[in-house]
Image (cartoon, rainbow, N blue to C red; front, side, top):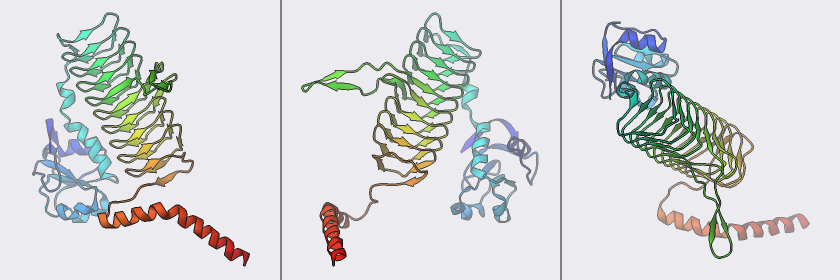
Length: 345
């Protein structure tokens, strides 16, 4: 559950969401909670019909829900067409993090000469900001984070603790970088001479658009020559690997453990489920959804939902199917010969 950083009423909640409500306008609201756990001074929400059973027994001060479920609500209600989006917007009122940000440079931080700082910048303990960096207004650089030389970071961007932004990276406005992510590390570029590997210098950079979020321990590699580019409003989960010179279109979302090989282009409004792998030098058009644990080895030129792999099954059945899989090529050849013989007769 969440708790309000300051006093709010039910009327304040409705006003923030731009909706009407039924109930006591002066009812104090101290936080958000689930339907099952909500106390009489908390707001809950219903965004999934599976939780209708909890609605009937909720003790919440009010419930955010779709009008079609209003008749089932035993407490004051906040009716909205998209309750989950309403919950997302409402959660911003109860986030205590911004209130803890203190503008200024912590005594243990290291900030090089020539760094350009906007208004109300917060650089926290043991952070390092190298030469030539520009930080916009209200930027927060979390404890232990490192920003390499000549980076540009837009206003209201937040680096949580222990983020690494390598040299020459450009980051837009209102970006969130979670702890442990690395933006602009070297791409995986090596040339083989028959006996050993020779490193290829990665000369490009990384460009992140506005409103991007990158999860903890994710890596976005710098380009080998041109830039790796992440479009506006792209959401990247934890432990995602994006290789050099990848381009991801605006409003796309990547779930945990996605891996994208070099020079692949992902369109706008794409969704990649957890564990999806994309081979290099591919193109995914706009509006592609790839379900979890799928491997994509060819370009996709038509919007839609794509899957690969097989779902879990009993080991005995899987072993039988694995044997059949090895026989598919031979079966296909035999079927082709049978069809040819049939057509000849």
